Image (cartoon, rainbow, N blue to C red; front, side, top):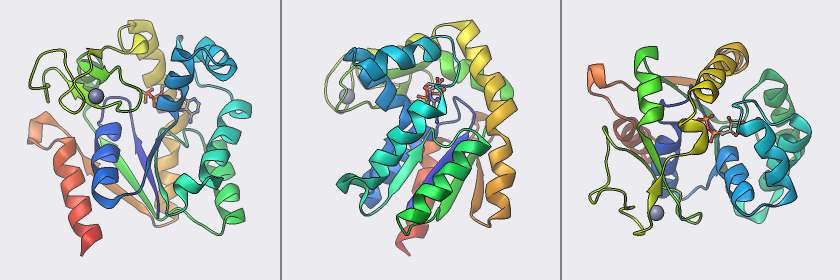
Length: 221
Ligand code: ADP
Ligand code: ZN
């Protein structure tokens, strides 16, 4: 089962992917998380990727595509993967198709999360992540705060704000790139007949966890 999460920053992609992953036992593969782990550990990949990430720009395909290919070839994703943050451009989507074809797999489901623009920036500013790289749980201090302020419910580690979430220029740049490059993937996957669009918004009282619950229920039918 290869599932892709689409949607602008702040829609709750990571939350939906994490909840579905937990319930169906297919790993969540977040390119952003992999990059951040490498940045923390100061690996050569991390040092290179940080040059782009800190400014809110995309990491070049020469780095990103082989990274994803290796994950998809690995034992970890034998049963499938929930891709969160990849693909982000048409070129990446086409390369993903080639990789999957070689592995005798295909994209089974694409979940496109939509959230009104005026909510997105606020959601990015109020997002907090667990500092424990093995956990990486995501919270929102307004929408789903941890039980104890600043502490992860799951593992007890401190929470922090991502560097690119506290930089208003980086936030603006990421949303621009989403519009320019990633939003066309909606049409790409609609044409393949695998797209499923879900609105996540406080205005209709529909949160990431509600979407995840529905999808899991349907998958279990
Ligand atoms: P967000 O969706 O909020 O931008 P992510 O954690 O998905 O956060 O990604 C963080 C950063 O990592 C991105 O801004 C980008 O620089 C880089 N990145 C993640 N996935 C990709 C990708 N598929 N292609 C290029 N760069 C990526
Ligand atoms: Zn944690």
